[in-house]
Length: 511
Image 1 (spheres, rainbow, N blue to C red):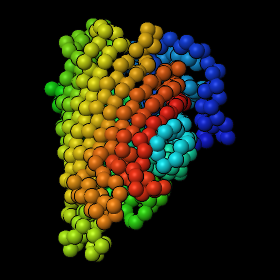
Image 2: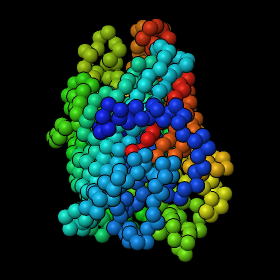
Image 3: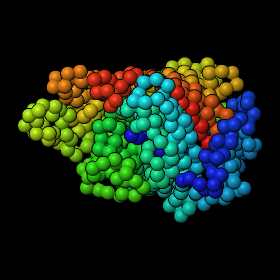
Image 4: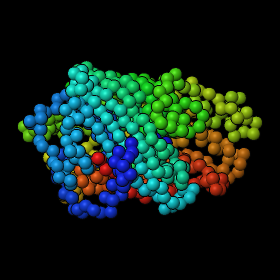
């Protein structure tokens, strides 16, 4: 499955060891979150995208490229240096970070570790550890080489642990956005050039960093609130999204009225072949073309955006609450197997079937995303209430999921003195396509007692506790109805997999 996100840069006592030691409570228990410069450590894969044009806070953006309109150094407030106030655990690394910054080089290192377990339902009970070490390097070509408007980006992943979803749950909506096969892999490798209000990016890209993104949904751990379940299930290899990526080109135009337009063309299958896509492209270095085309486009409209210089007290503030609205589509030119009908027009469940699914040329989807702040305690208050909704559909004859919907609400600063904490509640829904439902019904006809399929629903409640600007703890609860849309239990094919309750704890450290 998909959706986020190099290990051992610090020897055998690397990020995991540090994370575990800190989790023992060797920190002040009452960290007051009132540092203006504090940037929360992210719980989902960060975008490695430079902050140009419209906001693209896809699954937690931690862009390290300096914007062209950055304030001069002498006007910039001095970053806090105390352990519990600075934005990264290692601070400026003895002057290494600012020295590299002088040459236009910035880097991020982040470790996410979590333990999740199902306490009821599933094919078996138990828990699993999953970890992700994420490294990104960004070069501002203006500072580095004198080439204005250019950004070079490379990022890598070191994935460790095992997947609870594959082991115990068998759900369509993966319990965690960092679940993936254990390996060390290249993630993204691209160059972006800005030309006024237009920028073009070319290279190996992961689309979950810019397309279909909901900022409020990024709070949640389930993968469907990052890269949604519909493209993850329906596209070849799950599409170019964590932990995979594809070669392609993306263009973006941003306008003063809050409108941005994005479009791109990418290789249609990031891991061609038969078998597990993550094994077929185990290290992320299969720079392939010629596997069909994935065309994607999106229009974004942002309202009441704060000024780029919103930290300036004299700068006018928006009159209303901020929000972002998006409409988009994707089309993949590959061939897709019918979910029920064979080449002779018979159900694949029929004893007379030849077992060869009918083939369809291409598949497509339309989608809409909305993020809106609906309440704020005051113009300068961190306490606010945001909502999000995302819906997308696809043809039901060639896709396992033909409708995906998720929606939720997030409350920032839920308690006094906890300015960077977030509590959230969200619901995800995946409807089984019409032909896949017909196939299950036909199987029930020929095999009495075989379960029908309809949909899968997940409810998630989560709390993000900001221990320090560089350290985030997240407690999580998820409940799944009809896992897999109602698939049979492999231990007893006459009944469905039971509804599942999942508990989890995640720690994220920004080094």
